[in-house]
Length: 97
Image 1 (spheres, rainbow, N blue to C red):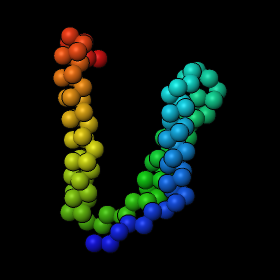
Image 2: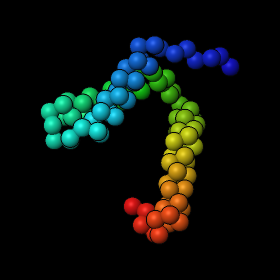
Image 3: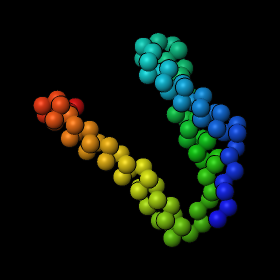
């Protein structure tokens, strides 16, 4: 198995988008600066994801890629949510929202 090479400018663009996301969530969401940040930080992630993804040519390859993503992302999200609910019910006396 060969090691994937990183594309430095893509990594830097993702870092800027992450900083934009943090700044956007910390600023007043009604302001002009927050609006400008919101109009680019998520689209840039989608564009860069498409730029760095490899084409899927068969349904079998698509299924393999899909389930790999499910295991990586959604399973982790479910585990984090369950842990959060469990801890909130212990510490927060049932008010987990």
